[in-house]
Length: 102
Image 1: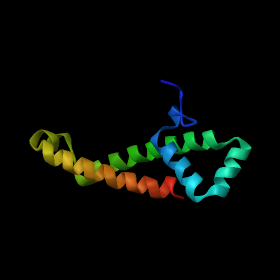
Image 2: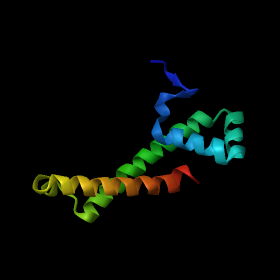
Image 3: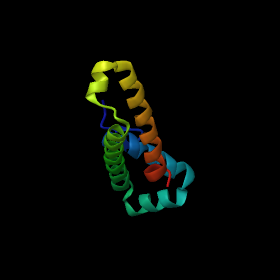
Image 4: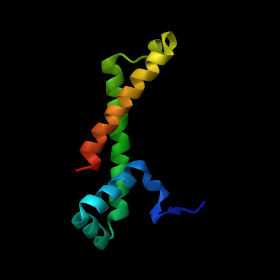
């Protein structure tokens, strides 16, 4: 497979791609300035990195706060999955608002 997909290096990741789409579609001035200065890829990589880091923090804090433990996983795996998925989707929405759609 090629290193590039639709003109984007694959290593910018999910969050970087989401940021690029947002800028291209809703904030053309910032997008054009980043392209003009040759900083778009750097911005997208940084956004992806910061978003992944924020997700990890939110998941860790949320699991501690909500009591989603390995013990729960052993006792009731489906409940553990349900709670973990709910937390993940909440954290994902938080990251989108904080870092992607700003």
